[in-house]
Length: 92
Image 1 (cartoon, rainbow, N blue to C red):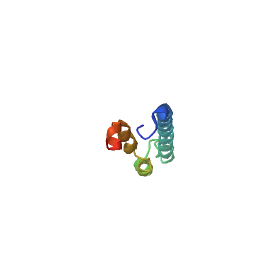
Image 2: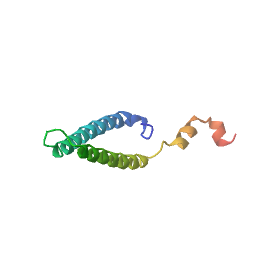
Image 3: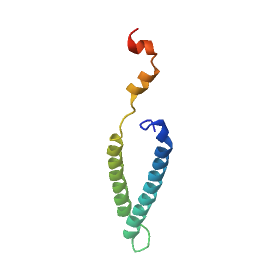
Image 4: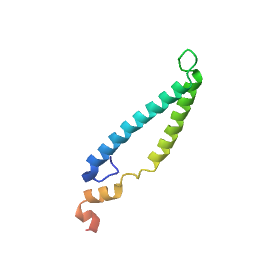
């Protein structure tokens, strides 16, 4: 939220919530599909299904981590310049 202007905080918060909700829903469905596809004859999920689901989750985590690194940092220079008194900026 610190990377967006104060006037767009509501939009950024809403997008964050939407993306987390969609990600959780899709992730849960992908894991459920994998577990049901690898079900044993007894109808219970096989250990292999859990391994595949966790591996895909780890891959998604890595992709998300690198996407988070692409988020621009907070602009500190503009913020600190606004807080300085006018005499400090002009040298007098």
